[in-house]
Image (cartoon, rainbow, N blue to C red; front, side, top):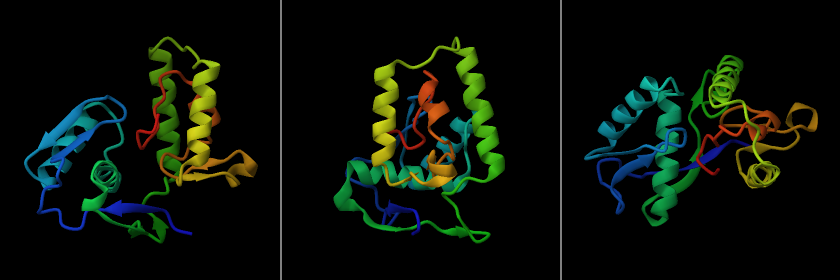
Length: 167
């Protein structure tokens, strides 16, 4: 089964809510007069903050956020594009290692505090209902197909955020 995301049918026509995204890691709202400029500006913002700025991730997240706001504007879901035989939404071992390192450094810089029990339970329940969650991966520990985390460590860090902005 392939990972799917709703798609914007024509990126030359602005959606009803206009071209904007809310960065899930920085909570910074970025808007633009065109889809192309939005992609460029958001990638630059994320690169400047040392965050994932891979073009396919940027594109998929823009589509997901806009389609969540304006579902009638979008088509889909459709499969992710394939890259080297692997769905582009499935993180590589290198990107997972880098992601874990960045999350851990952010957590340490933030005081190395754990999330509350309520936050952990909430995060877990959201992930378990998410279409990107693979519950049987990693010997039953589960895995997020967007960021590659096994959930447990990411749920525990009080500074962690969902890669698609669900928590």
